[in-house]
Amino acid sequence: MAWSNATATRSTGAASASGSPSGRARVEKALADLLAFEREVLADVGAPDRAAVSSVLRRLLSRFDVP
Image (cartoon, rainbow, N blue to C red; front, side):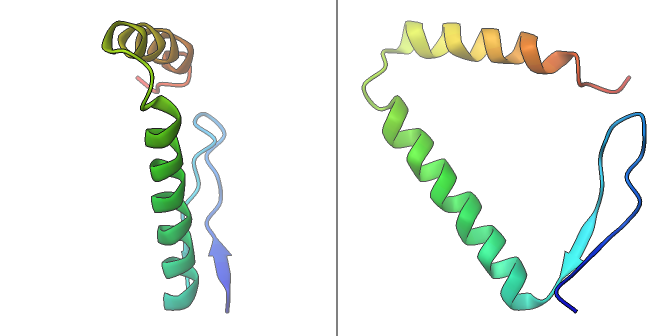
């Protein structure tokens, strides 16, 4: 079995998934690659601009927080 998904909750849209060890390894590699790319993109952005971007993203994402 490649992946099995649990039912997503309607309020959060969250779902859990389980998979094979090789599938999990691919997901972990994809996340590591994404983080490396993000670091590369932000490398030339100064600290004040990074703080501003972070603040805006936190505000945008806060509407998805579940109390």
